[in-house]
Length: 164
Image 1 (cartoon, helix red, strand yellow):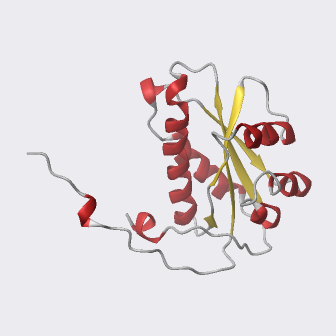
Image 2 (tube, one colour; image 1 turned 180 degrees about the horizontal axis):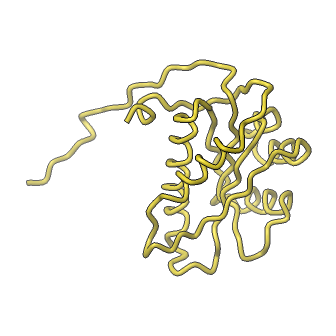
């Protein structure tokens, strides 16, 4: 549970590569997520190419840090999955697993939403030459943190409603 209560958005990274073993652990955690009817609609693009990272940093006004990250994972989903109306929900669960394992690996990152904004989705798909049967969902730049931040306490008991 520690990662849930310490995870923060990290937008500044040290200039050092991330070990492939750590990236593999992050991807394993992502793929362990539950999905509707166990459809597992996800695919993941691991981007370390500096030109591609720079291009990805320009798809959104909030993605600038991607150009300085040593690696980014781009999560995509298959359009032809069993229950496509749940694919983005499935990817959200996978992304949370991915993020929590990133923290467990001593790394930091930030989830950049791409879907459902069609222009951003298409830009990402074009940059990475993603096949037509896949749709871009999110960009997750990460690396060794070059900043420290405290997580906010978001618990608000007034938002809990009991139906008895």
